[in-house]
Amino acid sequence: MITNVTLTTKERYLLEDQKTHEEQCVLKYDNYSNLATDTELKSIFKNLSQKEKEHLQTINQLLNGEIPSVNQSSSGSQQQGSQTQNMQMQNSQSNSQMQNSQAQNSQASNSQQNQQGQAQQVSSGQSSSGSFNLTDKEMCIDMLSTEKYISGTYNTAIFEFKDPRIRDVLNHIQKEEQKHGETLFLYMQSKGMYN
Image (cartoon, rainbow, N blue to C red; front, top):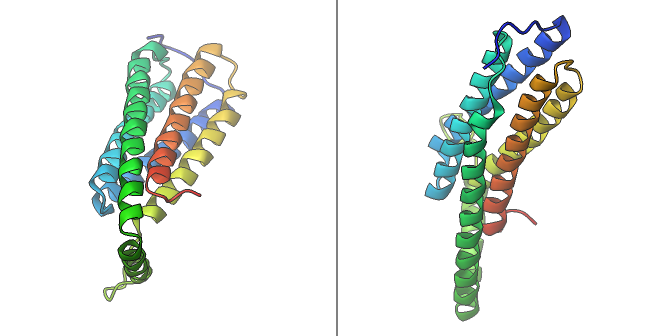
């Protein structure tokens, strides 16, 4: 780890923005992991929250004038990639099973889908306590949009830093943010949430 890196005012402001984004991601993922109804989605949200906490720690190190080694985090990225591949295989198997089941029970399935659609419409509105209830799909859409936005802000920030080592660290985080988006996309696709 390299220390005593001096940041320009602009670089510091950009990192402060990224810090705020990462804090919001952690809050959202933690909140959504408690609200999600699907256990697989709960697990995805918890895992992504942990990765965002690592990003937040990295940003704080940069703000303190330290440049962390990108290689330290790359094993987490590889692990995330293998988790994504495993999820793809499981989702493919799950989709095949679901298609076979739907072919056998199309009338029952249509009736069940209508009931689920009505239940989702009711649950996505306001509850009697006045709080807003989100569906798993709405939480996924929100987090996918958030990941897209944050990836874009890293893309902009990367070009504003004079030190190539800091650019490499930010580029590494951006790649991980893209992997988070891919994880959410694959989950949504496997559940028929992404058309």
